[in-house]
Length: 212
Image 1 (tube, rainbow, N blue to C red):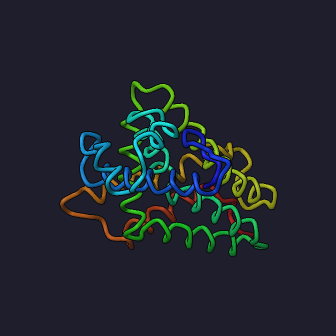
Image 2 (cartoon, rainbow, N blue to C red):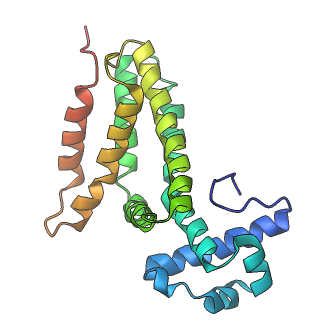
């Protein structure tokens, strides 16, 4: 299991597998209903672990739910932000950089990412009034923001992205238009991928230095 703030970090591989299994079962319970649907006895029956082991790793039901919320929040996003950084920092021209941005935009339109968007909203709303969970999510968010900001800084260094714009602010904006797609998912008259991407391209073009 990757080192993730808010999720237990065991030394032994066997314990690591146990934690991953229990968290996944808890995430499934959360996504099929809400926190009221997370029942310890059902998690134990589904995963086959003992109550003692569960309490040892998570401290109780609240700790288990918090760990599952962190995984919900970071699922796909961490991998996506690393892909964005890796792909954009490999580009050698402005056109390549812009094309790579377009590819990343398409990535967030998949059905899997639709589910991830709702999960992130759910995780954030559940952190209200829970300082430790809020801190854990903030830690994860900082990592995501920095990964994308690195790609923005790369574009600024090469003269493709405006230097008067803060890279972290641009990073948050980029994440924002991705996450806000959930409003389109919710709408009774959904916006098509083509319509959405056209608006995104227009927004991104405002960050770029015009080609010679």
